[in-house]
Amino acid sequence: MVLALAASVVPAHGQTGAGNVTLVASESLFDVFAALNASGYDTGLNSEPPSSLRLKVRDWCQRRNPAVLPAIAKFYHDQNVGDAAVNFGQYVSLALFLGPPPDFKLTVADSDLPPDAAALKGLVPLLAKFYREADLDLLWTRIQPEYDRRIAELSEPVRHSIAITDAYLRFPSGAYLGRTYAIDLCPLGAPEQVQARIYGENYYVVATRSAEPPIKDIRHQYLHFLLDPLAVKYAFELHQKQPLAALARPAPALGTDFKEDFSLLATECLIRAIELRMDKPPRPQDAVDNLTRQGLILVPYFYGVLGDYEAQAAAMGTFYRQMILGITLKTESQRLAKVKFAPAGSVPAPTGHAAAPVDPRQAQLDEGDNLIFEGKYDEARTVFTTVATADPHNERALFGLAVVASNTRKPDTAEDYLKRTLQVARSLRIATWSHIYLGRLYDLEARRKQALEQYQAAAVTAGAFPDAFRAVQAGLAHPFGSASQQSR
Image (spheres, rainbow, N blue to C red):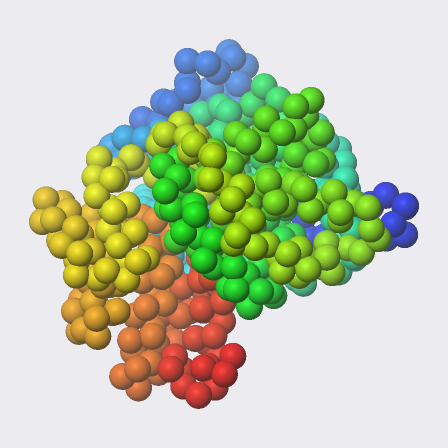
């Protein structure tokens, strides 16, 4: 079932909005997690009520006892990464790239799959067998009314949240530019999970059973859906504020993705400030201070300037540019002078950024990244080499060595490290930029066909990272290093 949500914006602004926002019951996602539940995926099972849909599906599959079950159970055991959220998330990623049953053909080329989904593509033929042997077509028909009921319960709260958000930002009808945002229910997963993805121009939120509807998580990703394009449109203005990135790098609790992509950091700060303005917590300054300690350094600025936005009539699409231009390094440096950043591990990953396994060499890798940021490439090489020697499959170390080689004019070495990175990468940012850097290397060698293949592979996952998205657009339009691209 797919339920489109046409969100009416409050009439005060004289606008109406209907975007490509849907509540979805994906049969492919259902089939993937039916197979996993029958094959060893027990996370959160002890909290399921006796009448839960998850238990009904497990009972159905157990009674049919498909012959392929041992093979799927072995596959699941071999691919278990240890972290429950990451383990769940990698199968979500795969399911989003599967076509309908009974074949479940991948919707992109193998080379274009995100890294976590690519690691699981061996499940596809097993899933096709399971689908036939467990009579999942019949089971899906029987459980669809339950999905319909859950979608109906969630539709009005989601519709209301979208309408209020559109009203606050004053976005005009048609601002979605053909992009889509799908909210997919997954009651067969462990409860209280929300995972977000951005693939190409498509935004997704996958939510399992929860005590309360995950409206705030859904709204958070919807704000990305609306505001990410502005970070791309006003990339030049954001790039002028790039020196501010240095202020956030010392924050131990701030994710690497935000430290390495200033546009992403700025967008996240803006979204958090908008959420505070919309929710009106009883002690807003405490909330602002807490977010700042996490490393979201522009939340205080955005929270303040949003007061000016609310007092005038322009839509966010118009106000955004002057808001970015109003950021100054001096003011933000003074603001942060007395801030004590929160320790590492004290803050959960924000919606839209799936948690990654904790790397025991985090401090060394952070040091290496900081050295690259400072242009100290020899010192960075030493740090990353130390990590890679101890852990030859460490994606951050391999990627760091690739970046160092690229910046010290060693293209052959850079290409080798980038290819090795892509063989082991699970981070979407690292995989995306590895493809981009390979594309640039091939462009500089006049290997345009191979360069385009790399940019196209990066395009699948670049949407989550504004700086990478712009780099992909530029690479697809003109060869890297050409006069046309340098003039952009």
